[in-house]
Length: 130
Image (tube, rainbow, N blue to C red; front, side, top):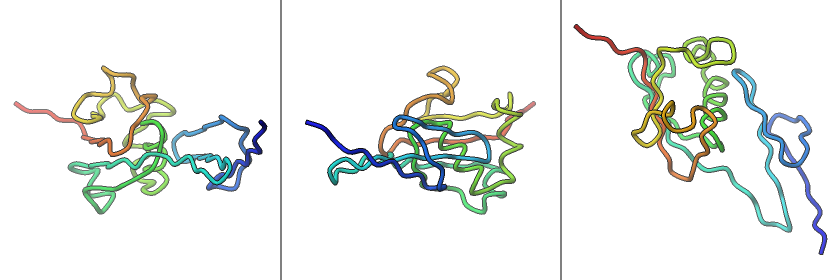
């Protein structure tokens, strides 16, 4: 049995089957149509705190993506002011705290961590005290 695959992107770029590209400020999202069955990216709740919330104008967003990196790329597309606050070049700023379902992503796969439906990402600015 053979299937015809059609690849679409939300940005109008062509991607080969299996390609996923995401980097700060640019996100290429491919989805596949296979005999009228749709592969849908999981919906992720993103909570923003302190000055991230102020720049975004909201405390919470619902975004779709397969990995933490994709979600961060989409977030930076929606709120360009956050890009320099979250990323230093292609790496995360060292002072950013990102949690997936209450656990620090740095201890569980980093920004390449694969997401599941209804996961929750929380993004915190630097925290200090005295």
